[in-house]
Image 1 (cartoon, rainbow, N blue to C red):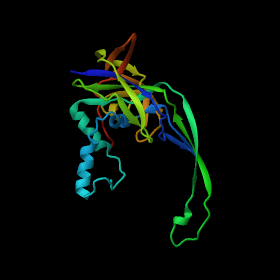
Image 2: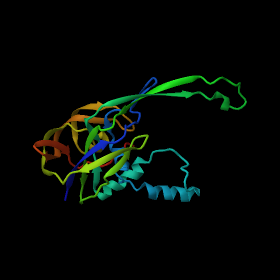
Image 3: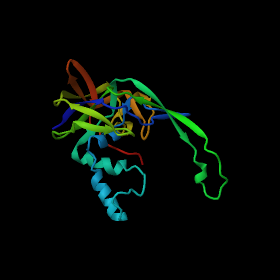
Image 4: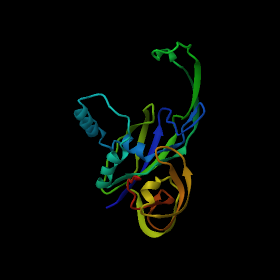
Length: 237
């Protein structure tokens, strides 16, 4: 039996991650990728993976490689019938921080010693009290944490989860305004048009028009909205 939960995320710290880099400006887009949310919500059994890696390399607190393992970490969620959509901002504001750094060329061995050249950068972050929303689709009732951490600085946020939403399932043309991961829908649905949100590791899409697709028509208060059915984590070859 399918359960759909509406999740509200309110920031208690400013949120930073580099959605785009424009010269010395590092900008955070007011949207949360569904890969990041899976980790933040504690759905990925990363401890088990870390233990296996440490046993293989005889390390306990050191990760020998900085390579994402999205496919390895998220595929088990398909088997458990758990899917998390990306989160969009309901309300948000931005803050701009300037930071300075120095080039430490004197660390280069056998090279000419150079002076430190002061430089700077700017980070555009999402301010505290900004609010996001996403949806969790599961086959069984699920409990999610109240407090989560997000972004490069592990910013604190409070999570509010609704009761399971009421919905009906249809097969027809529909539009989904909520952001989606294209890899998770384009293998099972026929997409006609969409707007692109450029961000790593996989750019997202929104205002997606589907042709004769299976979807949930959900009720949230007095509002109704559509979500594609059969969404799972998929990865390009």
